[in-house]
Amino acid sequence: MTDVIVAGAGPTGLMLACELRLHGVQVVVLERLAEPTQEPRGQGLHARSVEVMAMRGLLDRFRAAGEEFRVGGFFGGVHTGWPEGMDTAHPYGLAVPQPAGERILTDRALELGTDIRRGSELTGLAQDDDGVDAVLADGTRLRARYLVGCDGGRSTVRRLLGVPFPGEAATVETLLGQMAVAEDPATVAAVVAEVRKTQLRFGLAPDPTGGYRVVVPADGVSEDRAAPTLDEFRRQLRAHAGTDFGVHSPRWLSRFGDATRQAERYREGRVLLAGDAAHVHPPTGGQGMNLGVQDAFNLGWKLAAAVAGWAPADLLDTYEAERHPVAARVLDNCRAQMTLLGPGPGPAALRGLLSELMDFVEVNRYVTGLITALGVRYDFGQGGGAGAYDGAGEEEGGAREENRSAEGPGPRPALLGCRQPDLRLGRGRLYDLMQTGRGLLLDPTGRLITAGWADRVDHVVDTSGHPDLPPLLLRPDGHIAWAGGDRPTLTAALTRWFGAPTS
Image (cartoon, rainbow, N blue to C red; front, top):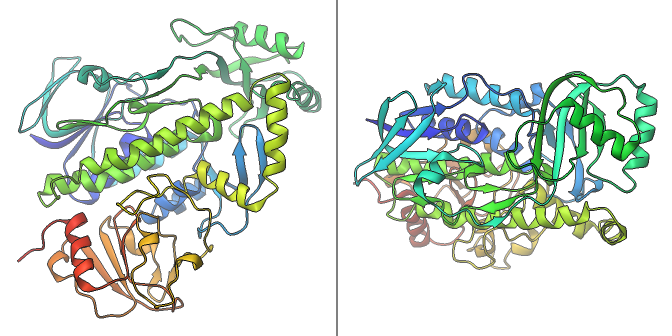
């Protein structure tokens, strides 16, 4: 029996495998496809995912595979500059096509010793109090202590569990593909600019890997979601632009709709759901791949703790409690964006109004935090709710000004549940110290004790350059579990997130 089976070798499943292997968990990844897909549906990492990769030592690999972009708002066709004052040391996104990102994560998973089995389709599962039995299409049976479905929007795992997937079916559909274009670039750009005055779900843009990336509304919603043909692209291009631009030699063709659904629950006993298996939504704002990677980042250390036997009784349940509200907010902002992207005077008027509002830095900061997930704050009982965002902060991290108390380095409950931005420390950068996937106590005082949790939490004594920084207990995902206060409250936080101390 292995520790964990992960169904699906997309970004979510691969990230989860990497997180589990950091803690020595045995992982088998099952992937239905014999070869990785070359369709670059996900187009890159937003700022929070950039932070995630920095915390695991993968950022240099992603930077080498992509290009930086700094777009604020990025909401429903309204783009602005990157807002001032975002509380991150990584104020940018990375344009990395999904196949390149998957290659990086696959390489890392293999380096860590993950067993990745391509051409292995899961078709059945059953669970009991001790584990999960997985049945593959070729009759092979595997048993694991836990199984995680990261197998996409049409998840077999979710279906086999019988977990409801409520939401809205697709009402519009969009064709997406990469192909060569015979028309000269200047004419293409001029026609696209004219069409986009009234139809924002239309575009032709040069693709870094060659040819053009073509986006055009479909004629209705398909019944079977089969891949479109090149003739279908030509018809729809002519319908919207009066020309098909001489498109030819497609590399890949696909379609996507605006279906918006979320699994009613993310856990059923020893089986969990993550990524698109747990939530689907239109690709507005480029949030889908990022949301799945961040699901895995939240779940990985908790599942590893359950396997290791030190997890508090409800630690695995906090995965759904924290990530379900985050996904619900993403679904809502996607619904809003699809409304803004619609044709006609109403959506155009809304876009105009939002464009004016985005000139206010506070609005731009809020919306940018929403799209990039920099604004995610988990509810640890302090109020505000998961996903709450205040839009404040300093780019080099540290305690936010409005959270600083006149009593000095006392308790900072307003920081609980927030992500801690990267910092420059005397020993290097904070995120560089988190690459093991363990918890971290950042202790400017040098007087705190974590002896009973030394196998789970690193103790870093460093006061360099941040005189107002309170002591911070960080979970492996970089969210603040304790900020200042006395030793009893620290002990309570350590026990809450890292289990009972060793004797």
